Length: 365
Ligand SMILES: O=C(O)CCC(=O)C(=O)O
Image (cartoon, rainbow, N blue to C red; front, side, top):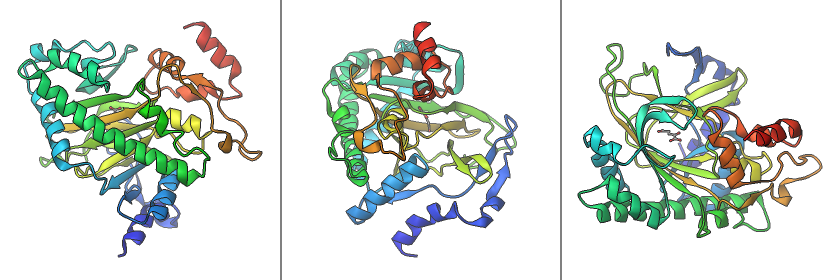
């Protein structure tokens, strides 16, 4: 099969009448969710540029999500980052707690945010600013804080470059006049981008499979949500867990993402949905805990500076696609986000026809 055909297959699958046969009720005892098993869009950065641009735009419009291969981030940088994460999570709990509680930055265990959301995970959430990383490193890695911050800085630098390249391609693919309009927000020295390392420890489940790839994963590791930022670039070890919510003819279905440690997975965030006036979808996703094997994931969340106003780009507003979202600053959006549960559809509060709800929301904050 040619590379191009392989790439289109996931997209075309959505259109096949036989797709319905692939939608099965979940075995998952925590809910009656529908689980779908097609593949997700795969984009190879070594393909012809015009093809990559088109397919990236299409993936962001249809899924808000794609897998990226041949991304150019050196394996050594990724391996060093993963090792730092594993080393930290293997410390005694009392040691790890010295890097917490999350405010929201720092070490957290089970509690996600301040509004009662919990999951089967522990995590480190850090600002990507090198000064902030080196300050935090002192409580995270007492043994060698400068090594820890050096490894993180190198990883953040490489993944930020990749995120900016993706955003520039999306700008070009959309045909916007200022193709750097998206990446400029991440490149700004005051960008509020974050890096997160997650560890989902195994829990024993006699019905699960021992290779960590069994399908009976029935605990929520990280509950359903969309990412509030512009773009998220995720990488995990070879353990399944990530699922994305996708619309099909049968309604919304959860699509399990087959793990691939050599790839990155790219999510459209709420802010990119707002900037594109809803043309790109901020993908809802979740991670399931695994019964026998630890899942490690690390995510770069590319965000604008706090004071930055977010409005749909002028080219995205046309008579057939009227303005959908009101302008907001990233600080305003974050404040609302931290006041809500993880699964809340925050962007809906900024919809043009949601005036009253948004005003109410802001007035009681
Ligand atoms: O660990 C994963 O695969 C997903 C984690 C996630 O969605 C997050 O940290 O925001």
